[in-house]
Length: 265
Image (cartoon, rainbow, N blue to C red; front, side, top):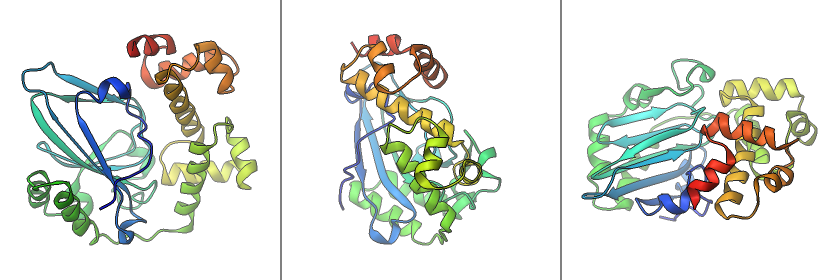
């Protein structure tokens, strides 16, 4: 079982937060590569310590989340969300590749925003058995192995549009020079209208939203590393001015860049 080498993203205040929990991530086996981006496991022991509220950035990928509260399939998340950790606990999750579950839901993906579904309703799992065999597994490998066996029974047909959307999203994520949908259209040789239509169906969120999200990822990384002032940050990420950067921070995180930077200190 190979650990994931992808950079951790979307976890707010990464350096400080890491003191409160242990995060491990693993790559899927080849048979699941079309369906699963990674498995992730988090556990914590805060007995006798203050409660920790972990905050995370929105995420367009869907997840299977298993905890003592049950097994849920989480739709795309459009706003900052938090999870309260207290005492001793564990979460086991599956991050699915972008768009692959769009046709598995009982509703269009763009109406599933910020919703959760019972895993048994989406995948027809024996939900109680899944929870017991993962949360009570003797180690990470046993938990991931059980999850892998369960997921192999799911039949997903990847259509060309899903693959195209995944490619477009990767371009947005890895190229901070893409600041407008028109730029993405020019680079990918797809029309703006076609890109918007595919994102509505397979992501549930607009390409403009995703561009703003990943620009914010870059901004948070720079602030976390204390590389730039807010003015320099706006210039380096090609914002028209500081007010646009502040707008994105307020909309996604409900804080300003200066407030976020002060919380890192």
